Length: 248
Image (cartoon, rainbow, N blue to C red):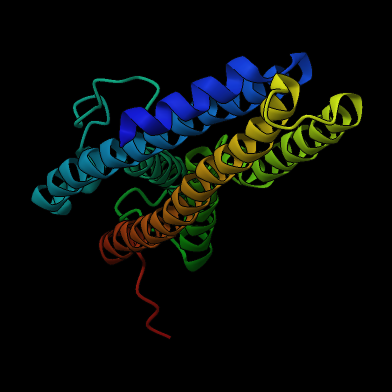
């Protein structure tokens, strides 16, 4: 059955005219781009989730000494092109928190009261929170990079298939007008096969592209919630350890 279907497409391609072959080649190219994109994105998200779980476990083990956890010693991916959102979120939170603590420490020293402990004010916490959630949005954009290719293919493939259909029908009618003999006219048969094959190809490309896009969008949306929960966990930990209690 599979060989028969493949033979039908190869036969339609071989019997099509020059423009019909261009339509076929365009559809084959879209199919290649579609499958490369969706397979890479699915693999990338799988790697991102795996790295996030490993990093979250390392954070959980050292939550009491969060700012002393070295970023360089955190679990890293073997693939440099794979985003590491959890690591990046923690890196931004640690950097900004240490900067604010250093600023507050300098301010305390300038008032000649070195015995006072260094705390973060409510405004400091809000500033760190702003940086963390800005980082989360940036990481979300990184995960969605080039994802627009899939909806573009979903829209373009059926139209390209429709173009092949219309062109095949046009070739068929032209052949009928020229010869009037349907059974022996290879031009007519080539036009019909082009019309049918390009329609099927366009749908076979658009359907998996649409399904993959919806799946990936939902997966990224779910992971966005994970990033927000992780960021909130870090912020709560920092606030618990360094937030100055208002006694008034």
